[in-house]
Length: 146
Image (cartoon, rainbow, N blue to C red; front, side):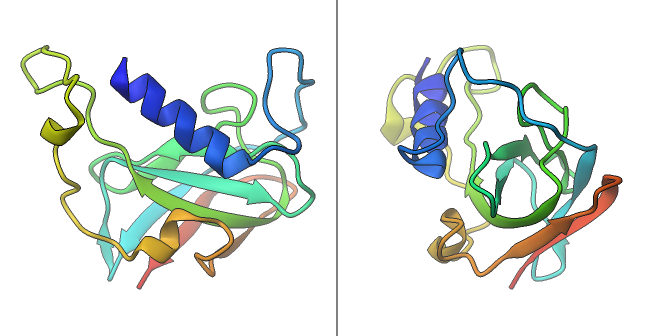
């Protein structure tokens, strides 16, 4: 439950008040989009990568696996991203349980990220990251944090 609340707050923060997501929102056109997230050349696991299209459409998000790989979803999980230039943000997504099936309800007991990345990457406005999603889609998008 806490994870859902935190994820909802993050999504609201990423999307802002305008052009927000609601059940009545129409689906936006997307293309297949996936890639790799690295920090100082090493893959990052368990981070949310968000692509915010420059045209103000709905953001696409994906969570990285152990190899730093992510698959973006905009209207639904893994359905891709809006083609064109996208501002990118990256935030840590703590696990929703303690590894033994017990939900972590106390925020002070949530695990810390395995790697601390600079806070500037948490917002598409301050990250300095811009990735172009090709019209034909791509499985080789690269997000490199320094």
